[in-house]
Amino acid sequence: MSSQPPAKRLRSDSAARPLQKGQQTKAAIVDAALGLATQIGLEGLSIGALAEVMQMSKSGVFAHFGSREELQISVVREYHARFEDEVFYPAMAFARGLPRLRAMFDNWMKRTSVEIDSGCIYISGAVQFEDRPGPVRDALAGSVNTWLSAMRRAIEMAVAEGHLHPGTDAAQMAFEIHALILALHYEARFLGSPDSLQRALTAFDGIVGRFSTAATPVPETPSPARSRKTTRVATQG
Amino acid sequence: MSSQPPAKRLRSDSAARPLQKGQQTKAAIVDAALGLATQIGLEGLSIGALAEVMQMSKSGVFAHFGSREELQISVVREYHARFEDEVFYPAMAFARGLPRLRAMFDNWMKRTSVEIDSGCIYISGAVQFEDRPGPVRDALAGSVNTWLSAMRRAIEMAVAEGHLHPGTDAAQMAFEIHALILALHYEARFLGSPDSLQRALTAFDGIVGRFSTAATPVPETPSPARSRKTTRVATQG
DNA sequence: GTAAAAATAGCACGACCGTTCGATTTATCA
DNA sequence: TGATAAATCGAACGGTCGTGCTATTTTTAC
Image (cartoon, rainbow over all chains, first blue to last red):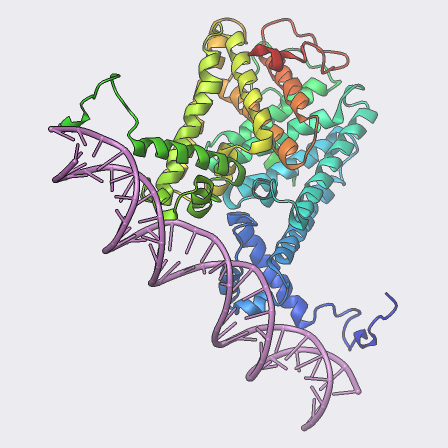
């Protein structure tokens, strides 16, 4: 705490020079590990395979983390950071209430539609660590809970703004939205159903309609095209 | 095809005498394997661990299947059979339309609420085999697709019976119901949220309400207790 | 340039994995 | 009961895994 190493002085060019060679390769390793983990899951991540990708020796990779568990945790942290950068922060630029909530869902969907090909460690990790207590599971669950809490807060704001019914149960609505992402992943990635993306969008409108204060007459024929500009996700960013 | 072994003649007591000693222990092995696979997933299933549970030698267990893959397929088939017996067939006793659809969902929920403690190989298997083509993946996907098709058929019957809107997209509604089960599993089993069961029930009513022909005025305050007898799942069987 | 420090490589260990094969026990049936 | 077939065992093989050690190379700091 008090023994800041004085050797940390800057050299010449920039203020911090944050990346000693070690940190730099460590970041590259984590990046490669993230790529592997999204496909095979955190549990399938092996140091040998990672070393091969990095063209390094196993021990060279290993030395950066000290244990496989620490490597997995680093991957979870990196994934969390990227998720926030891609999904959470851009949505904060939208007006509080329904616009922001929609933006959060749209960004989430956009990321998920990419992950249909690659995979999502929040989902594979949940399966692989649901019976395995420990720091990896804690990191995963903490990260997911952070995001779900943000969703709930956005919903509560939409209630406060008068966009959603006053009695709206934010946790209930967040549960239903979360469910859509999980089903999209399952049916598109595992079963290969091509229409899943549109299904999730349609369902989101249904959920919002159920909780919304806007006039939502019961449609005679519930059509997917009711209030959906089908290009919304693609055009949002 | 034409060389039915004539040694299959019956002996004395009953018609078939289906269980030579081998088939008997094989069934016991599959049963134990199913117990292990639900917890650790099909991919975590190891012959060594299975042999220990069975108090047999590794090679003794192995000989019944010839390969690990065949063992996994046997487990999937057994799981499929039990799922049908617990969820599908009992619901067939209900009247076509909404009653049967509700029974299917209720049975599904009942099973899922048990699997919150044990696990579900349709979910863990999806994660573990989504990038691994082969007979195990095919068995899994085929089994899931069979069930989802049954759900869609039940929905279409409910439309035909006039219980749901004529324009109802059965695949859409099945997608949304499937999503609830996945979210229940995720939030209850992984995150440990205690209210997830009630959340899924509430959401199901919301979905049915959106597609139903029954009078469903937009509720001022969408209350979970609206049309829900909270003991429905428990009392159905 | 040189000495200290950090990063990386090489190698080996023990553990577990699925699988093979020959020996041995157990069940089956005339 | 005795012959035959089925079931099970025991030991071993090649492989991958995470990890711990000791060299060696590369980077850093003066």
